[in-house]
Image (cartoon, rainbow, N blue to C red; front, side):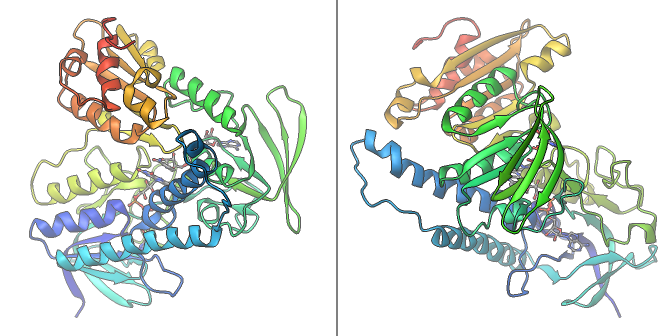
Length: 476
Ligand code: FAD
Ligand code: NAI
């Protein structure tokens, strides 16, 4: 007889494994099925985020930043480093160790929470019966199980440029970009989005000459314009060659290089030859092999699993969360949806607030934001007030030797409610949390301006930006 579960989660990325743990906490019998394999063919739960996304990219960003600081920034602190050299195999090995720690951590959490884990690919085998949905799981698990409730969390894959399939040797997706064996002298990046800028930064810091070719005429269109302009200036100064408005015409692979033919923003024909090419032009939802057609699971026009605001699909008892559904492709968004769905299955009022999902780009300086940008407020016809404070005027930033960037507050002109906070600067990824909390509690800029912030800390720049709304900065 097939094993029977209250809840089966397909996919153990941040959306899936968190949903499984929350469902188990709520008293359900839970299984989680994940197909990801490590190099030995064993399970590697954690999905894109853990294996080829958030975690390994941040590990390499940290290592490459240390390398760059040792080369330049330490000197100013009075630390002379001689004989500096790069041990790339060790850097990659460390990244792999960090990944494995996270894989193992998830397997431990499954055990701790009594979630049954199956290693293999799950597919709907047919319509629901009295026992629930029958699901077949491929090798190595080789099982058929039944689920009263199914949570689909199958994630996304890198989108390839037409005519330039990923080979992960010369034309790289995020997977190959995180495992280059030798620093490429010339690295091309197509797409100046989050991956392009993060991975471009890693390899530039390690010595590559990096050329980024972006299709749109604007840089980081989703980012507040003032912040994006500052970012473009800083990244260009660091040595990233950022080319906007490029139309890629042809990508040709040679034996050891890649030629990209493109028109620049002026429409002039260009040819560039790279040792490696990263293509980071967005991601597509992963519904392959799920058996969606076997059960009549509805997909939307872009191939995402179609869901309502509560992550319900068209099938009773089938839910979907994370990258495989609409909304930002972020690990923390996937996690919030996973928790909310588990709670809804338990009859609770799970909740995801899409207006307060923070975004972070882990470049140096980091870029982080929550809420609406100034250009969005203008387009929405909202009367707003803006206040900015530069890190240059923050004592802690000066002590750190990292004074680039600013904090920017946007608040409603009448009520003073915070509508958006935008940061470019040191530790922006951590600083943004205060803004998220404030917006969740519908705080005003004045609330932040009147809260005591530790001195000296970067967070004082947040308070000062709130004070700047009423032109009352104290240190600038
Ligand atoms: P995934 O993490 O993609 O997990 C899906 C899992 O399902 C995979 O393990 C897959 O093998 C498995 N699966 C698929 N189909 C089946 C099946 N039929 N049966 C069994 N298993 C199946 N987000 C952030 O918030 N912060 C970051 O810093 C960040 N950095 C990133 C860096 C890079 C380079 C990339 C590529 C992405 C990054 N992201 C980041 C995005 C983040 O990785 C995704 O938003 C997140 O992983 C989505 O989680 P998920 O659970 O929906 O899917
Ligand atoms: P992206 O959507 O961030 O950026 C893609 C870029 O490629 C855009 O600027 C787009 O205009 C450009 N583009 C698209 N087609 C093109 C073409 N044919 N020629 C030239 N340019 C083209 O996607 P990216 O960087 O691939 O990342 C995917 C997603 O992964 C992100 O949107 C984000 O959700 C997630 N991610 C999150 C991170 C974080 O939170 N720090 C880090 C990395 C990825």
